[in-house]
Length: 254
Figure 1 (cartoon, rainbow, N blue to C red):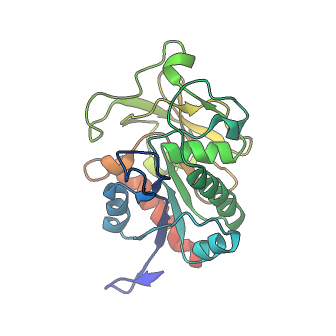
Figure 2 (figure 1 turned 45 degrees about the vertical axis):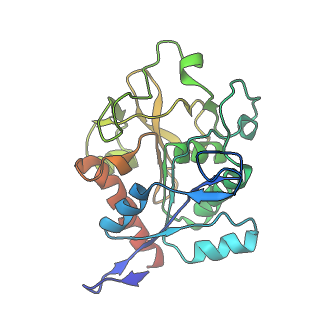
């Protein structure tokens, strides 16, 4: 950790970027490229942490060294999907897939975070990665696989709220937001199908889609399906998610 001007220690939060392996024209074309929305960085920095963008190192010892230098983890969202083979299914729909390098890195980080009891917040695709790493599965395409499902890809900007979720009593999420329900934004076509054996579902949309999972065995391992990085400035409940991650991260070195 690093001290701020008041002498308090700021927690260092490792943030995973998206990665173009050289096959996405909109992000670097044929040149392998890291990219990340600045909103994730701003949320951590403006609420009292030090954001650190993590390179997707392949070496196991290198990954451990990276984790030695941080106090918490933020797994960010991604446009492409995790490969269904990672949860034992064939790919049924032709959506772009997350690069193997990123998927391998993030799945491994989840296991390290569990072993170290390192605080982890997974957002959207980060929640899906958390669930798959813990042995769960995903709906590959909600509109195709879930009858009567809501439209989870809102047509308004992500700074606007879209639908409600019910928050499970006694859950970490309930303790953080201090509400039995809350409004969220929505920008996904996949979601958790089978919850990983060591996780619990802690928020549900009105159509039954799982909107949050967490580990009851750890201090702070939480995945949420929405995007609070678009909402934290004007919505206190979404700001509390980042604040809770930072509080837990401050305890890591202690």
